[in-house]
Image (cartoon, rainbow over all chains, first blue to last red; front, side, top):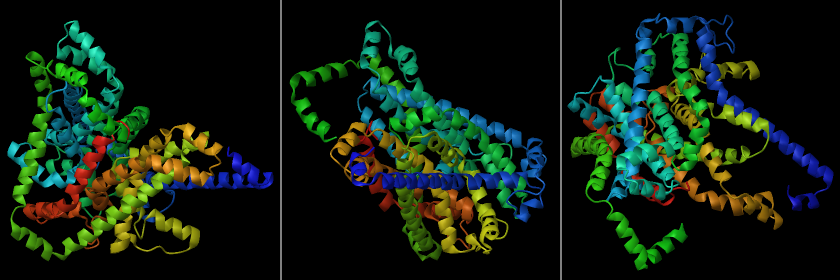
Length: 293
Length: 305
């Protein structure tokens, strides 16, 4: 690899150095695996423990049982009474947020990037500003606003909130990606008599598909994983999403941690699966320009 | 970057281009213009109804000077300010330094490095809430897995991590790093991959060692991306609510609260929403310049972040 080094070092030392480097890398890899998996393994162990086993603190439960998952699936604990309903709520919020983010984001990026709306820069600056304001800092006035709009305890309050915070990223990414599509396509369609709506529907959207997948996945996961706004806006068992229901376990001191962790795993599985399914698109979205934690 | 900045004034001085532009813009008349406005309206609505209105409402809620006197008299507030500084300072910089180094590690070839990467991004794919709850239990002094493993391996009885201010705070920071490290590593990895391979080859031909290639090729080319990432993550860390809420719970005795959580606590536990807003507002002198710099940077680095 490096010409200079092979000449400077004797062959055996070069080989020894390389082997040492290789060993250090394997070690680093192992450390990374343990670091990444420890809390997740911990989650699984607690979920598989019996109620008493949780407090034994074993590295592997003595009598591993799937009972906690059975309790979650059959809503067999009073914190979990509406689990499937809440699961549905989470899905509804996620899908609606995804749809609205894609719709509003693609329309805005189309009009700014492709139609060159006058003062369009103002719009992208507004989006950029929203993107860099921490959502948690806006939470209290946002809650008040939702009270004024009469939306508290409605899923739409959360959908509105998360759409608000997801759309700027969508506009950012979609505008970046849109630059790679030649303007001549729009122009020739216009000459053929297409109106802007037709250009948007039949030229812009199909060509933007990869970016739309990235942005849609992002919005879906953001909505599914969001806690603070869910917690503030939704307080009745019927309106709650899984995130709020999960955090409820912490309200009481003697919560069954095995049930809680089983719920946590069931809640974590859909986003993990979606994430690994769309990993390539997500990575493409990231390199396309935007970043959001 | 400097190239486009230089090219722009030249371009606009050329009459033909200027005219060409005007012709294109004037295409937006009549129905075209109406369409363009209609397409922009949904976002404009969102921005006014859910961004500007809450901001204005927040400014109004926190406009009473008495609130700030009350705030500065509260010792918990000063603790939260110091915690936030430590949280953001350590959390962001340590994470970014590691992300930069690990992105170099993941550039290596070989199937097992790819396999490690797949496992390594699991924390990012996992929702924050379950992960932080698990870390909370993991660190439990009596029944937590960490102390158990410590006991099994070394016979040392580990401390009760979440019962002390500093250990609690660093547990939160560690959890935040654990959750977000993969994301930033991926970003920096993408940045490293976009560095043209020819530059490294040319440097190697010139006899540059590994260290020199790092300092003279990788670092200069990635500096801008790195700075943007640090600034962005500073904003994210400043607003991070979940790690503190679910790992230490703000305890013991509210000593590990940060600005993002203390404001919510004022508003919803003590029912002083105005005080909560005022508390958040005290972050504005730091936040506003940060937002300005970030907007500039993001706008400039369009397409090449």
